[in-house]
Image (cartoon, rainbow over all chains, first blue to last red):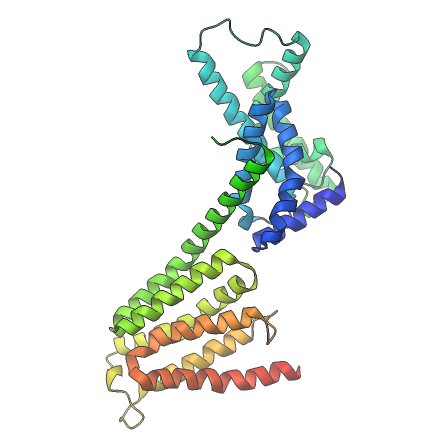
Length: 178
Length: 181
């Protein structure tokens, strides 16, 4: 998503926060594709991804009135999506624990499965961080303005370093490497 | 869980948005509703209770709708606390507002209603960003006047007349000053 689209999303969400209902449809159309794509990739399933995207956007629209125009709407949406993906993965894990082994996804290619598992593990670990950390990391990965606010580049770099350090610690505590 | 194709997801998100707005408006109106309930109980008439109910309904509806109406109502509700609470304070000090009339020896409640109505209008009109014909100013004045009615009804018809006088006497010069600027 380019800077112009991000700026438009911020404007639309600010208008919606003020009660301008005309901003709803264009904002939804702007946010749905990146959020559902992100969630589908993170969960390696289109249907689960769309479900998580729907939940994430529902939370975003529920809290639309609290939107701070200095923040980035797309990053906020992706942060909420990361949290939802984590919830879906936990639900899946609980389900797997009670299911009988041997009836799952034999048809999937090993490389796809490994990539999906790696991505899902990253989302899971990301979900253990604070929303501010997630926002900074996602903003830097996606190259947007999210999490930046009015911060100077040096401050932003420090924030990113600290967030990545916490991500490393969280990853190590769960998976033991990195 | 409903299907999550984009159209049904959009409908679900829209419902969540409207529900959240209504919840937020209700929570924001709650302290004013409480003050209105206390003032209506102090007024002791069904008319005061009916006006209080209307003001609370307007605050919730306006808060849910948003935009200029909600912004104006927030300002008006704060301004309206002055004419809402001042007559109650006067009553609490032992003055019997029910006996207030222009010919009475001490028409304190009428004076309080006039001054608090004027103060509410001046405070409201002095908010930055309010234009004279704006919906913000109209909704702010409406809510402040409604709350003033609930507060001043304790002083009877003369109390309400005092409130109206205060609003007009302060409102007209304020409007002229803002129009000239």
